[in-house]
Image 1 (cartoon, rainbow, N blue to C red):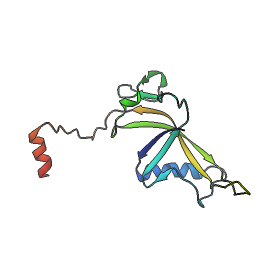
Image 2: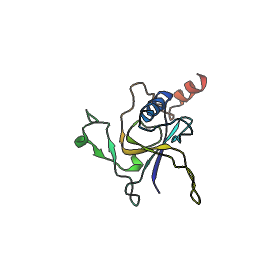
Image 3: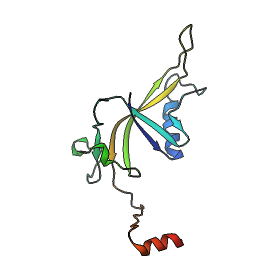
Image 4: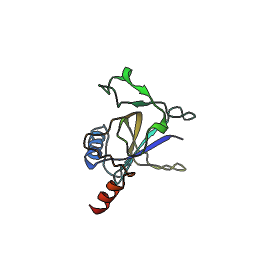
Length: 143
């Protein structure tokens, strides 16, 4: 069992993760098991599985999001689809194993383990749309 988050990332972010993983000792590209399908990247946590994930914090009103003491705790329901988040994670690489008699093998790969999730303010370029306004609905339909 594990807590799982799947996030759609940019090609640039995916290449950054792959570049870091490729520098680890013993890395071989051949049949490497990436936690990436298309642009969807899977992050996992196996900490306190019997409880809600606790390392969620609000970074919308703090000047320095890296100041751990200034972070205010949130609950998982506070994070909605489409919000901006900072996901702190570590890369755990594992080495494959050749199959042996009565034991199946597996290829080398990596797991992205999330450590904390921070809710960030909307980016300056983000557009908020008020769908309750008929005038704005009309503009959206014409454009």
